[in-house]
Image (cartoon, rainbow over all chains, first blue to last red; front, side, top):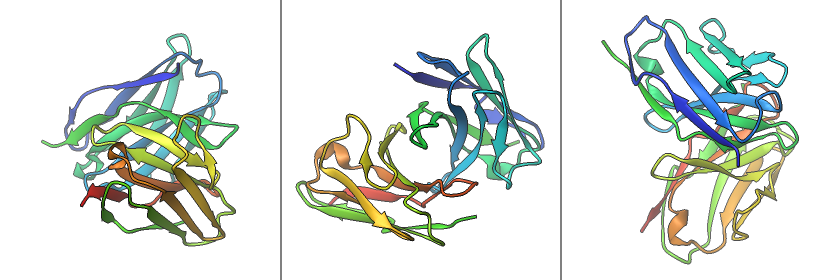
Length: 118
Length: 107
């Protein structure tokens, strides 16, 4: 069974970088697409970006200057880095697999809450 | 970006009731519309992809329909485990965008 698990600091200071890891078991990240989605307080959800099976990336233009998604295929992990965070980046961050054949997020992690505060 | 207007934002409902959640896109999205359920513990699972295709394991009381700019998710008879948040998501064009969510609550 495909399983995803997010990990990383729950508290980040403004202007610093937010770094999260998504560990995947049961499936290789060298297939399909692997994304990050966040849910803000108040329930709005935002697609942040993804990394493909080949390592290419696509980002939400609203974040393009601040976001980087990378991977370590030897550990079957992919990563999110978001720079210059503000309090508006406070959210629950989810990693998910995006099915290339059916075009939807079919497996999700449980989410990790990140608060940006001094 | 394509804006997704999801209504209602909350829906007090009763067990056994038939409910419909709507999602309207700011432009035509050619049926490229998915639905997700988020439980109170935060877990998210897919329900329906490509407007009306049911994810494996999802009960048949869930169904999706629509075309052009207007789409809907229907639950034919509410079960206790259906009280949750629901989101639509379009993938016609990047960036993928979500509706604002509908909270199904017990009346």
